[in-house]
Amino acid sequence: MSERALRLVDRDSSAYEQAMDEWVALFASRDEMADEYASCLRMMSPEWDRWPDINAAILRRWSPAGLRYIKQKAWAVAGGAV
Image (cartoon, rainbow, N blue to C red):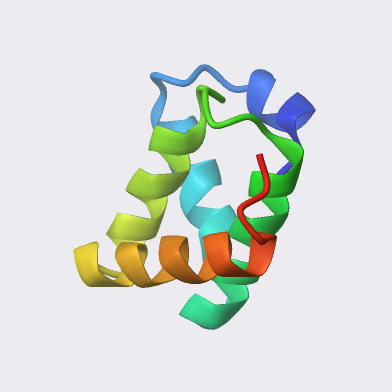
């Protein structure tokens, strides 16, 4: 989901949460999500204010262990970018 699209939806709305969940649902596996997360790591700073929203959507789809797996793989794929 593009940064521009995210800005069009109020972060406190259920539509925003639904949009994040739909974006995460596009990825069939944790490995696919990790690749996309790695792309985000390369493009965004660690202080980007959307990381908690992305992480929450991942948690709703998978689990705390799934989020850890995705983040660890993403950092490895991104090569420590940022």
